[in-house]
Image 1 (cartoon, rainbow, N blue to C red):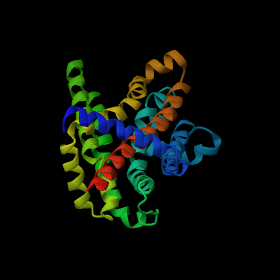
Image 2: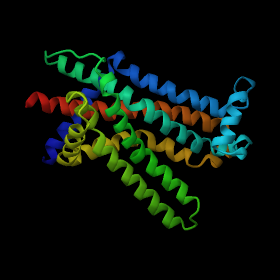
Image 3: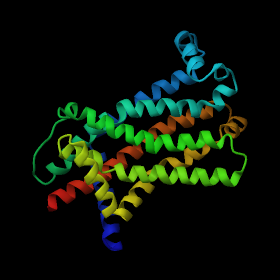
Image 4: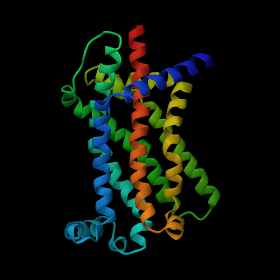
Length: 277
């Protein structure tokens, strides 16, 4: 695929995603996921409130350690604590909700060409396969950077820290690119996980530059806030502890937007390919 075709497909994917964004129902799974992610963040940040302390204090002490219940460590490590919770929420709920969203996306994209209508019921049959995709996504896209961040804490060389960080980022973006088409193929193949993975990886290889452009665009939506949240001590010194919580909440919203763009674009590309076939 030449450069001109790649750019045109990228623009077409943007147009299709914007068209999908005009349908409120398509946003519902992403809104539910955002709420599921926001609730534990609120509980982690306000664990000391009388309404929450009875059950949250023992949880934080047992999972993260006693020192995480004291200021300022509680706020300094809030991004790290929340990252662990976020991985769990994405694993259990993220791709199941994404499967529902992709079904609605395919429905709307295909109905534009006068074809058939789908509903969300088949998502129930895809749950095991969606959980497999969710595990792979969490392990590669979120787990690798989390592991690198943990390793970097014991490394004193800034150059080595930077190299490990860049390697972790590259690996996570690669995994994201390999998986981005899989939910669409999974829905179209009615839950056949092996076939969906094979087709998804082949598409990522065939449309290498296009996939890279889509993945990097989505990544760019969250990278500024992620960079700020990597330095919570500076945020607290300059603006106070509340800004860390506020930026994490904003990051949940931007993460939902990234998910919508990423998988909306990928779905539109797969549907356009199917219509031409």
